[in-house]
Length: 170
Image 1 (cartoon, helix red, strand yellow):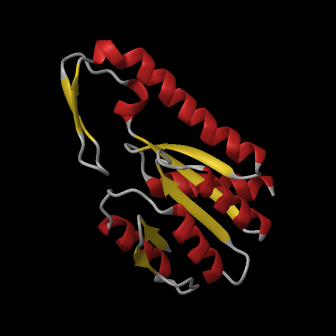
Image 2: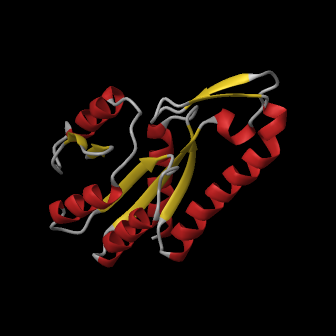
């Protein structure tokens, strides 16, 4: 288990002990969102850490994913890792059902924008749909599992359902 933004913020070595799942759960609960990710640096580091093939799970909104992130994922697949992406989407991002002037604060940069939702709704939803499509298309083309996960859903339930479905098809 590794959590990162510009640097590694949490790390647990792979293990098969019964407490491993609890340790990962504890780390996930402790994490706070924020900061942008340095995918080139982190994915290069992680690829060196994994000497054996395994399941690699990425959990992110992938909003700042650029070509270097996608290249890193291709390297993991080339090394025969089984990669899964959980694409986090907040309900407000997906529906944009704001009806009054609203202040948006970027959780990574703290930049603020005050705007009328009616003025940007169409353009925003088009751009957001394109982002969702880009991530899904990349995964499909490269043999990666990609599950969209609303932040209102349980990660544990989604992971269990995905693993169950995958085991039934293999």
